[in-house]
Image (cartoon, rainbow, N blue to C red; front, side, top):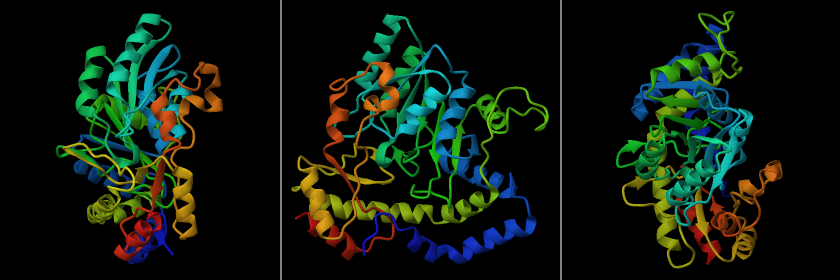
Length: 368
């Protein structure tokens, strides 16, 4: 049977190394902030080419910690995509700031920089909130257009946060996803390209002051030690056991990226005349966290896949501005037409490094 994401196959390949790493943690007994955490942070920072990596409990906390480190709160506006998982916008609300949604590009599914420019001008003209930051999402593994986003944010004096929860492993002209903007974040949720066996997250930055604040914030705002609290923070540390797991998975990460790209290539060559395959701009490389096609017959194709025993998913069934939690913001249907339309057009297909070519062919045949 074809798996949408096959963590068991991955575990079968690395279980001996996983057990060795876990046993080392158990024998040492340092379950919180053990040496594996520091080792992971150093290796990830080197891989991405950034100065600092600070791990935390999950990807949502990574976003919230980033906003807190920048002093963003009530009265501030943070611009973000209308088409993403709820956590992206939720983190803005958790610090008391105002999420300002922006529509996405119809081909990349990532935030539209032209529409973002208009949204910033509108908020500045209204004068109710002070524009402070942008959270851009690397949706489905494709980095957002940071070549346009970075100069736009400099133009308006906005901080740029890269939500690379799905993007780790992607690139733009050789620069790794997770290295863009003032701060980048990621998630180690098990189904992510680099996932642990529970929850986990990380923040990346080249700014030593931001890194120091986040290290403090993740441990209740600690100063010289955990009993010297110099700011209001959170309890958001990555467990040592999860760091141990991630170290083993990181060893095979590059190889798995190669395999993901191979699977994506097989899909794309087969689907070019049937549905609209994912668009990857020149100079960009996707991490292929998900392989998401676009079609005008979403329900029919999902039914065909189900009949053939092929799993699929729709990410996302409702755009953020239409979520009940944001009814008070005053958005309505029609405000972000591209995001709204995508909810009824996209289908994500099985995507993981352990898909065999005959399984890929079975997915393809199910759609023909």
